Image (tube, rainbow, N blue to C red):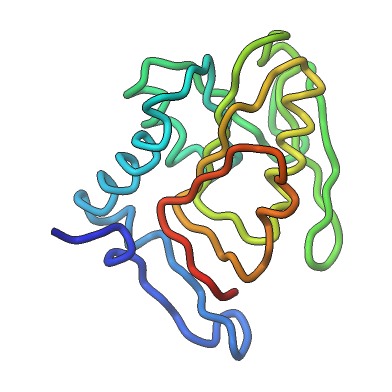
Length: 174
């Protein structure tokens, strides 16, 4: 039986020499790979009590919505600034070169609701750290953070210290 990592395409020297790019699209295009990835996330949640799944655009939507659907939970999208139609809360975070702003609807999470965050990849952890702050600013409690892939060499997990973090695949490098 194949494992999720068997469906990941690794591209050397992209976007720069010395980097191995881990391509999630090859998981998505194969029904078995996609099912293994979703099942892997759901396995890490089997003993967790939670109310909502939160995911950032766009790949957090791809992996978070099927998890929410299968586990009969609501899904909350986190979007780039200016994409949501109602009143929002926002958080700025640092990128490798510059910064970005993400938003979620102000009424998306009620105080006391337990939240799971799902995304495809953790690298430096900046996006997820910002999402955690947004959830908590609305009174939500982050009970688990799940990824399909983790690039452990970039130490993103350090930004999420104190939170329950799980990855289906862990790559030791960058």
